[in-house]
Image (cartoon, rainbow, N blue to C red):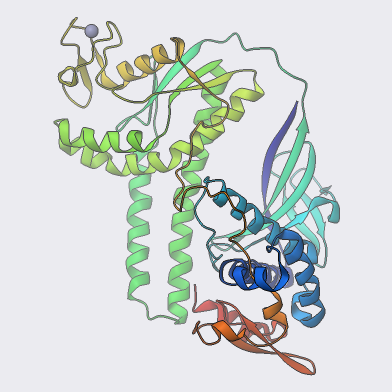
Length: 470
Ligand SMILES: [Zn+2]
């Protein structure tokens, strides 16, 4: 049984390496955006002139030509740039399959990342119990804080930045012997407003709301400070870093919590039944807010709920693979009316939900905590017929863009316009932020892109050019 798992470690690059990371991620982002622009704006032209669509292979060929002409693009390993083209190709595949929205450009600050296929990297070399190094092309040895062992065989290494810290994520393939089914008990889980997770066995698991409140207050304060700063100023840069740091703290807390909670549940139970996440499920709690009395409780819990909504998909993903590793399984059921159904007799009546916390059946008189009752209903649904088996989070993401289309020919255009100098006739001047002249030794090459380009050899002006555009 082959399992795919990611292992992320914090890395501590030297100042030079960190500067190189910035440049690498900037160039890789640029390649992605140029390639996206080519597919988006020039596909008709390309199809007319070449008689075929732009695809991964054709863009890779053009990348080779581009690298031959622009030294600062050549200075970044070709693998990382090819990986960006591959990502874009996948983004289009997902879009045409109706699984995702139309690919959007990568942005500085949000997409500071690049990836190596692992065959081009050394493996993790252990220094002592806490530290290792990894050797990456053109970057040398980088210190890695190995807080856990790396399992399996690494297929890729992704370097990314978040809130001023750098991380290396290893995409690994682990070969495990297949497991026998788990004989541990089954549990239904209701995601609640006051208690984050209510189990059908009666227990609850909750995020620390006080802590979240503090982090939220800090984040709002940092955001206010940020909004007062003048655009492009140094203080704004600092305020932005501060805001990002607080947001990252809250995200780290939520992630830590969901992994601990899902671990505990996967250890205790063999079968877990969750509500299927859907648009209905997302709005259900909002409807409940209007119907149910005791609104103050709900208002105070609004923060908790917002956080939970975000984390629910991540929780389902985490519990799915943790269960799979232990021979357990995850089931998802229809989430409708779980809060109005009696777990004892099955009667459905909105009036049974007396308050936020109390459920009292109008048919049989069964009384219970409302979250606990809902968790039991979810468990019953999981155990009865017509269950949908969920191997993953069992969630179909709603495509933001158009529905799936039959042809795959509507991407594309020409990266060649990027390197053959000057914008193409038909769209000359149509994009205000488009052109910048780049000195490449003897001749200047005009590069069209969203980001205004500067030579990497002048790293400062390059960074400044990217900065104002977010
Ligand atoms: Zn009842």
